[in-house]
Length: 338
Length: 258
Image (cartoon, rainbow over all chains, first blue to last red; front, side, top):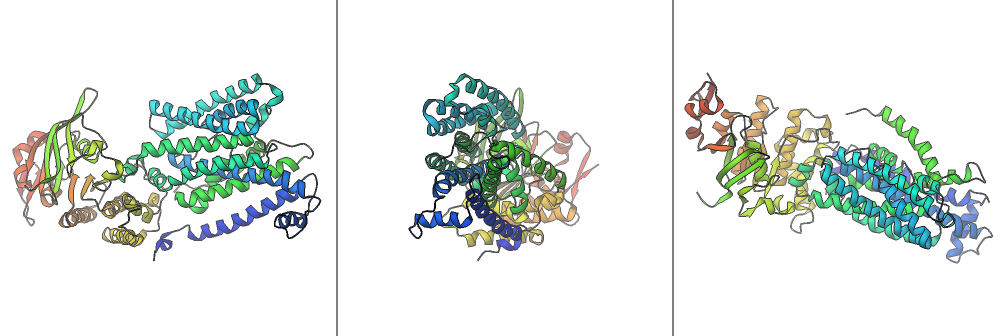
């Protein structure tokens, strides 16, 4: 028997977090399926589900729920989960709450590849292109950081500079491509889930599962690295290898989200920040908590993006930034340094 | 000496034109306590970091149990030696227990080591360093002395055959200094080889089996405290009037600034 719980100041908070977040996740999903241009009752949503297993016949609203809203909501959930996860992982790796995949240039880098992929062969290729370019951007950042300094702050600074440069290139690429075959620049800079389908969801889900598996392998190493690089090495962590692996997996994960939904800002910054205060800093709790938090945040933001000023659909990144920014600032002001 | 567990063979380490450790040779018998002493800038910590595998010798070799530490994988190294250093992340937001538990990371996934073994090692280490009372507190809220004890607990939990300690008694009051030095003795009597950088020559005089006196990157003298801690040598390397007398209660030399 273990006595771990006796020493864990977050044990109670954590239990509440899982219960509340689990309920919020289900509620967000149901709301995403029911609310929209055509109102579907919760009963109609349930009927759609039951008809899949042959208990009910398909309701009239079934195509809206099953073919449009459900894949879109599922994409929002996995994209949000990935962004939350990558944010938490990078912040642990670089020991800095500022480490956000989009701020560090991984998102803009992925956007270039995703735009080219989409222009060439549609959204599936866009996702693959995003993954490829996201990994390339993370390699570039890793190399830059190696040459410049091992100091995490310097890595973040070089990432920010890299991000600004790559963002400019996103603009050049998108304007240079055949406009009719590529989503507009807003999509790449502000994000949107309007292009989601079951096929694109499947592709994103596969890439994200692989990347997440890689990131979860680093769970305990990240705890030790958060305690200090040399300390981690003394305890047997191959910090160089972990850093490379985490950055590649992060690049791949972010790339997949960008290919499917463009750049959705602030999720990777805000969600781990909140999760840390609720479940603690140990990555075995922080990583899943950031995933579920990110999933809720993006799915709820997408719901707002497509319903706030119907029939106009807002970019989801506008909502995440407009809501996330003030919340982040408010939390920063409240945080007492221990 | 029986087969030495640590062997340093004319090892040097330079940064630019500065030679921090200059052709040092050393053999350490298993189970002994070795104090590395000397003035600031003598190369003590650099030598310890070479032993830890953090720094790789430019010339010469550093071997633990026959394996060159510079080219041993981190995971293998972590079962050969533990390292104490002042925390580089004193603001680390982990609980005391979590920090001590990190000492068990080298054994993750080992078939022969159960969760129960880990829990027992963590518990024992916390009891021995008197930190169990604040096991649930955040490491970031501890005083410097408390932090030192927690990091010592981590070293004990890691249970490596060699413990490398960089100034473990700095920032401690007299009572806690003695407590840490007692833990070092305990580790050695349980078979662990301890190599500690110590500024306090009197701690070295009483607790160490061997004193390695360094100055300007070189080993000036190696031997028992009685052999090494002699007036002429100390005056020469510290450039400070120093007297060595017999300790009134402990049977060892007492170094006094004259």
